[in-house]
Image (cartoon, rainbow, N blue to C red; front, side):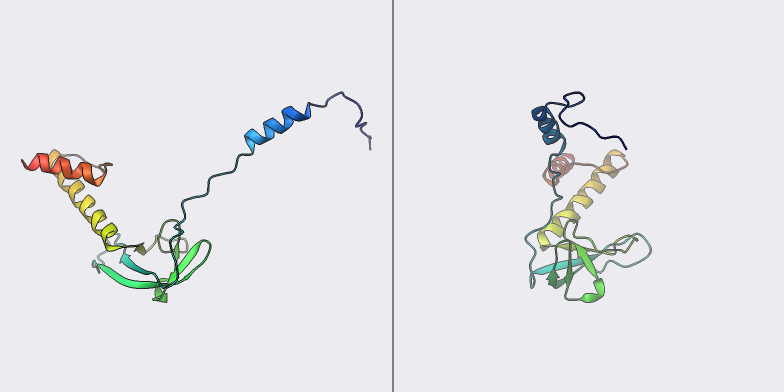
Length: 147
């Protein structure tokens, strides 16, 4: 095995430029938005996600959070399993999630209204796909179309 002489200046770089390069490359990665407002005993609402398989819309069910961990939380009705703190979706264990958590009813009602307005506008103008606009803009468009 060949020994390398560390005192030699051949092949070395200036230490200050190395530190600058490392600091620009090793920036901390932003953590995903985790709902830090979750706590045990908090009232939440569970909605069954329908994938068009003939399952009926059961609406929202009110429940409480049983426990909160670093990544997951569970609800009192344990048959639902665990939910992601980041997405508020049920852990499907490799399959599509069956349930979604809403922190309040208003959030759910706004999502329903957004989907309904988007569907009406798409039907009226003959467009396919999703309209990616905020709810307030869709309300304005719908009001203009109605007048």
